[in-house]
Image (cartoon, rainbow, N blue to C red):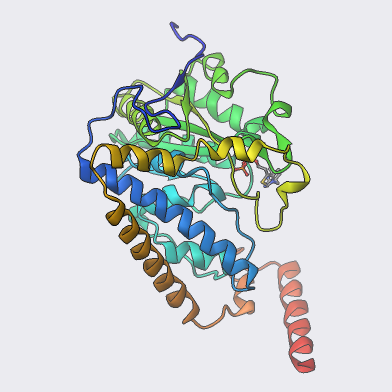
Length: 356
Ligand SMILES: Cc1ncc(C[n+]2csc(CCOP(=O)(O)OP(=O)(O)O)c2C)c(N)n1
């Protein structure tokens, strides 16, 4: 087969922002655009956590620390390519064309929340690893249709212990599906560390076992992620089959707003990873290359705050979700059990409202 086990970590920028690899040929404006998305992702995530703490948003999983991987996954994709991810991939979804308002609506419980068809993203997946099967299914559909598109499936390292992940890789390998499977290895699956997830040195090592090339990438280096992703997407598009990418990154926030990582994270780990922060690394590179100035950076941050505030205002100007509609989209014709749950909830709501 000629596929060997990957053992080197692909990197373009060191944590200090020094160039150690080949910089992708991107115009300066595009580089700044990638950076803006990273800053936007962190600001959006922070705002979602703040809103949740104020009782204005449902449970949310922050993406802090994973901005480079998220941007590198989506930026090389074309409009017709599909992207299927979990709750951690919302920044990749934004780049693909899902409006931030639609994501806020999802987390606020609006059942009417929809992504535009043109974004080519399936709803964010909560059931671990199933999205990888969906991505390979989409890739097979693309292949049957003879289209030049690619389907990308993204999951966390915890999800790789699910059968679905391995079945998806096997199927993709056997049928040469035009798919790219990306694992965001952020070191933790809630409180389970990466070391307890697999005895293998790297998750990317699993690829060759399925006849799929595997790549290990510094997931906090947006340029490295961009380049490896672009190469794998190009190969899939050219009919050369699937790839597996492992992005080495770190979840700097809690698993979700319902989690407290202080209970399980070893002391000093967060500090160590803070030194590899993906945003400060890329900012340093852009400043050094004169692609961005301190003044432009500050202005960008202010614009992003205003933009996100506008999204929050649009969300909060909507009438509240009618709880009765929660049951409408489960089946075409609601089952008797569902109808009984609906009646029970409406009765409870009426009683609660009556007491107020
Ligand atoms: C099939 C399934 N089992 C368990 C869960 C509960 N659960 C939600 S997130 C999570 C950890 C996921 O970790 P990882 O795949 O590494 O992704 P991360 O949250 O770190 O991005 C678990 C066990 C679930 N959502 N789906």
